Length: 244
Image (cartoon, rainbow, N blue to C red; front, side, top):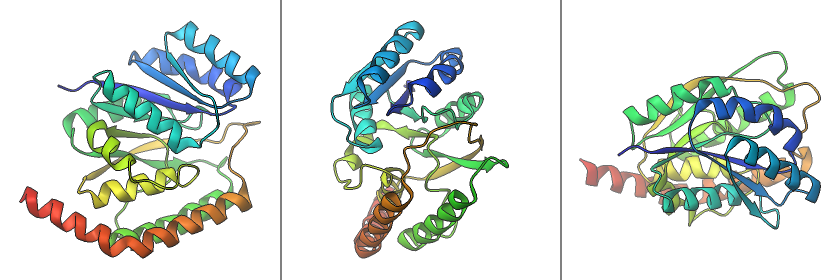
């Protein structure tokens, strides 16, 4: 049985999400919005938006980072009987029109992680592009695979059972979440399939990314992943051996 749900983490992006929510609602897939400790007025707006579109609203009282919001969403979705969770950010950077493509690909390959391969336009900041290239370099080392997808794209479809198990062993729940969960799912033997998707940076958009703090945080994540890479790759060899 294939039963997908959309899971959207949101931290102080109610204004952007209000415009984006209409596009999500048109997809016609059950949707869970996890409010990751937004300010009171933002939370109030999010609840109204969710009520208007029939989304399930979950509030994490204290901001714990995107990873903790997704962990809450994953576990709730699995307990509700959903088999796959499509992650999409609330700030409108991703093309909601691509959701159907991601879901169709996930249904065809239900044991795989479907990851967005971003296509940027002129709105993408140069610093972000460079940062992603650096992360891609380190992920290739951490997985011994030069063909790994963009590790920071936030549009993905996760098989929930294996993802919930891997989430128990994550340590970086903020800006490093997308990277760590991708690498550890790969180590757990999960096959990764990519799907092209357009990524834009809306005018007057706000970002939760803090240049100095989060770059240091991501650097610490890569140091940690490189240190345990031999163990992770051994696990992948074991998982692949059992399948064969």
